[in-house]
Length: 280
Length: 280
Image 1 (tube, chains in turn yellow, green):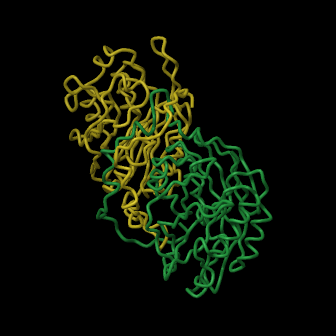
Image 2 (cartoon, each protein chain N blue to C red):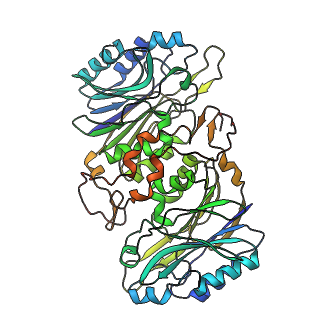
Image 3 (cartoon, chains in turn cyan, orange):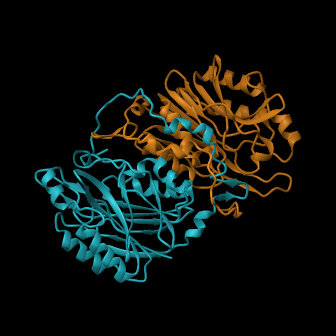
């Protein structure tokens, strides 16, 4: 199958223009296209009114409808980050759509920085979506730093982890290589470029370098740091079924879950609650 | 505090000679010295008789006694991999010793490749050892690929993860940078060099590149791939108490353990049990 990523600079608030650029960028043949986080709306909300304006219901909102139309015309499945409204709650979500409609929605469970002022953390179980050509897991941006998130999806049979992103820090791409190796899955990072400095807020520089890594951690594609790019790679999702990394080591069968119990417990930690600068 | 690693080529079966080289290499001032996996014995056992010859009880065995003596003379704590015998069981273990004796032992829980023919997998809970200058966790080599192992130790308050290793594959060092970042702990890999091709077995080339990474994932030291090296870095273990990576994100408090439950369950996986070559 063919996996594509489209990295671009969404223009804040220009939903129709951003969707037009997505529609113009996707060139078949491609089976799965991963787009950045909040790619219909832009990232840096300065007040709740902006969020109410730009967030949409799923599946009825105009962005999801348009993405479904684009997916239909290009005969692919799209994973796209967008702000979701559900009643009086707002989520940093990603929809999985094909030409027939919405296959699933993921609501980001680990919120980054000021996202906490705007969004409710996701509260639905992590799910694997069968898109026909592959079984995919969806996480969003900062979820990368929690190995448990990718692990959960891989244990459920995800063959490809797609990660719509608006990354500021440079660590994620290398970490997603480690995630690929430790789970023997493909990882696909679609990261936006450009910057936002809205309403007197600290400028945010987004770092591009979208990336596709195979199950063995080989980087098949790494995008530039600052250019709009649509890129497609051939991948073989069934390779992710093979968890043997030596003829004696199957990384799932070799797991010792009895040693991992503390990981699902809420613990008290002796950490000093020292604030640190975001630049770290 | 000062953390040192000594990477060298242990000579198979030459326990006294290997310990002499360790004694000659460690130069104070240093507070913690991490040595490779099975560094007293060598790695590639060809039959059980060799293992019975070279494995020792802890703390009474001569290697542990000698390591204690070396630690005393150099005023440091040593983490050293060695084959342990306990009754009729054999473990791929690491001892933590200072001049007063044994502070703790770790028995490798994830065995690699033909280690499974010789050793019993460790069955004691993962433990953090207080060596005075720092709280350290000990894992061994292949444990690196299971993020749960480092996570468990970090959640228990480990400030430094020490990883005695005999690595064949090239992924571990980059992964230990990810482990450092995702847990905000120091990671110290002591990896042997050289090769072994004993009794008609497939040659094993060990890859060196011992590494010290700080809590932010900066690589403070990376050794050569093929030279004996003793190297010391200054580190600040209390920095590992700070789990804030932005002023709004504490990577421990931001965890969502309710989403991680599957990680400590023994699951049935739909994986095809396809053998793969060790060279992968």
